[in-house]
Amino acid sequence: MGKLKDAQRVSNELSTSAPADHLASARRTLELEIAGLRALAASLDGPFNEAVDQLVTVKGRIIVTGMGKSGHIARKIAATLASTGAPAQFVHPAEASHGDLGMITRDDAILALSWSGESAELLSIISYAKRFAIPLVAITAEAKSALAQAANIALLLPKAEEACPNGLAAPTTSTTMQLALGDALAVALLEYRNFTPSDFRVFHPGGKLGAMLRHVADIMHKGEEMPLGRADMPMSQALIEMSRKSLGCLGVVDDSGTLIGIITDGDLRRHMGSDLLEKRVGDIMNPAPKTVPSTMLATEALNFLNERKITSLFVVDDGKPVGLVHIHDFLRAGVV
Image (cartoon, rainbow, N blue to C red):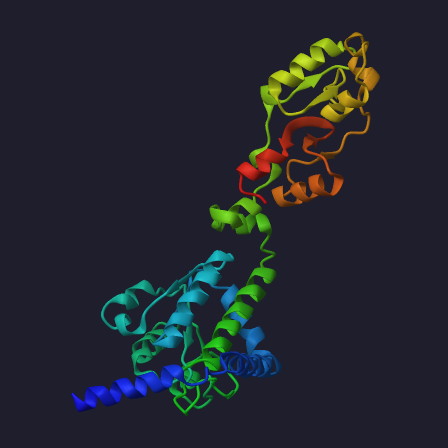
């Protein structure tokens, strides 16, 4: 009971003492990691170019591997590579010697992460790479380590200070540098391949990102959904067409189907009068409608709408209307 009371007393004293300066701790951690990234950027040289040249020629996949915290970073790097057009897969080094080496083919390349370069679990993968002449790219801080010496290309990390205090050396700055170097490789590879937003959308069809990468053609109204009329159409019929399609406008086309004008709700208000129904569409249409192509990204089209303070756009290819988008269509598609 005495020991329990002592423990409770110490706990109470700690809880009532002055609060720690958490912001100072956070800033110190970030500054140390920033310093590590700066050192990494300054250290990049020829081997980085060699690594990109090696990885871009892979016929199979980039096999990313690492143990412990390096393994967690390796998983993220594999995911980033795969989502940016470089087929990749994480293989756990401890599982590799129990059958998962079969996941690695002669058409692959291996990207192995280890701060010390001496992770025993990597030995089976290193041996396998040598046996079947599979290219091995290492990310490590030790140039003389087993991993660096076995690798075809070694990307060396600078010896930056970890943010963890008390000499515990829990991976902080080191894993940040590993992650950043993986991102640098992924971006260099996608730029080399001219990976476009359209390509990116193939791998990101869902969620907010997928919505942002959709094209106007994916969300537009088309065919019979478009409100269209001719310049000689009586306004009495034009109003019925506009009301029936409920998109707040009417596109005006000529005999060849080319868009030559538009009538919006605003145009109706500006021409409101007792003789409105006696007029023809050509009498009140705007002869210079704002349009966008069907290949435009939905986010760009939404910006186009917002900048011009309008709510509808005809989608035109080769001068002819192929669709119409309303601002509500962007909201429904999640493009905001």
